Image (cartoon, rainbow, N blue to C red; front, side, top):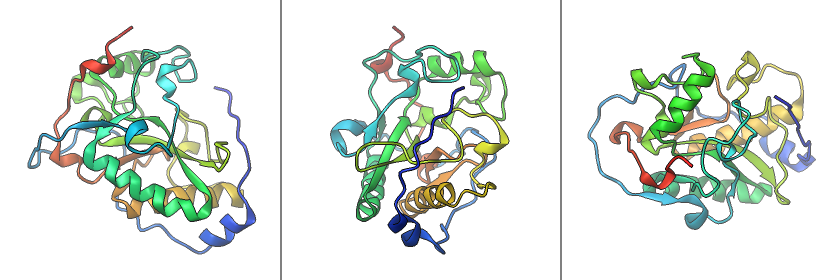
Length: 224
């Protein structure tokens, strides 16, 4: 996949996050089904309506994904559980003083879309196998996210979305201080709001409440 990065991080951002270490919880190595907890029926909400300041670009509604073609219909909405939306509001509030904000590439993902991804990749290290529980995205408690500047331009990160290589690890091992600072800012804000990040995908964050939910099958994202 073509990778394009914009290095628009200001010196002020570097100073603000230098020396800061995100208090991350230890997530599982890959997308596995959430353990059974006390399940609750919590409604799904549209992130675009709940938090208009978040930039939405559902990559699976475009050809800019690992399959090279749209998976979702063009009308797909960015859906999460209501409590997850409240956590995202906290993230936005923390990022605002730094003049950066969230951009979401994916959120709730229905089972039929997960099957398309599995058929394209068939690597359980990166894509949850539908027959073995599928993806945490099906719970409405996960988002794929990055950062953008005040003009909506993506900040430099270790890789592009859906990069299934070691470079996509949540632990940046490169030498670019701008990328390191940007990733640290994202991870710190998400961690403080109650998200943990998958080991192999720096962009994939899951709410710590995921154990309280069951997978859902929403008719709002019917196949085109």
